Amino acid sequence: MKASKIVYKPVGLALGAVSGMLAGGVFKQVWKKLGHEQEAPDATDERRTWREVLSAAILQGAIFAGVKAVVDRGGAVATRRLTGTWPD
Image (cartoon, rainbow, N blue to C red; front, side, top):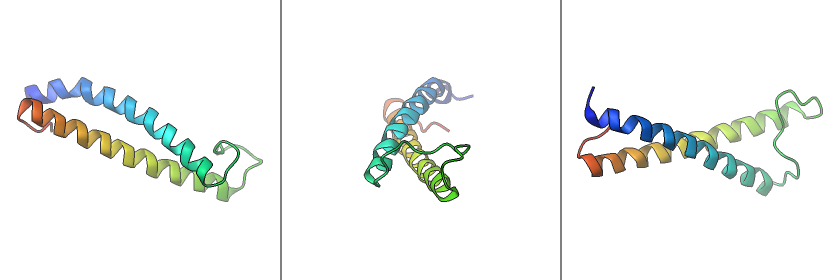
């Protein structure tokens, strides 16, 4: 196993946690901006429609994936700048 991969592993885990928290905050703000007064529905909330539940889930998934990609890519670029190698 390459040294850069070993060094990057804990950094990647920390970045994953940070990206999850960041994405959660972004999603809440976007959900409010879309005109929803309540928090996003849970899938098992019987008072919410299929449309609400699926819309929230799809939006949340897209935001989480986008934020994770940005954070992961940034971490990989920073690792290359520091070590001279790309973490695989």
